[in-house]
Image (cartoon, rainbow, N blue to C red):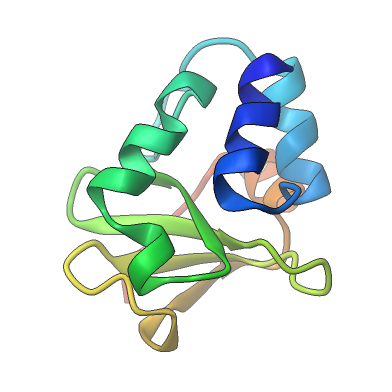
Length: 114
């Protein structure tokens, strides 16, 4: 929970509920085409991709190893998971991946590039 509090302080916002619950209960990496950042790596990854500057109000939670970042909105009324290119990180260029983080997890973190 300490890492989660630090992450929320960094973003000056609570994390989306489903994602916060996942971070609280899950330890280690998941297998698959999508890499979800570990709690201890979240701030560094978001610093690296300058998420706060180019995608204010979003948190980058992982990537596909091929240039796409997975982002969540920090606004309560948006529970969607989006993909956006690491090269731009501009929310206006995002594409919908799933209608919720929990649903995306249950579906096996499937991501098919358009």
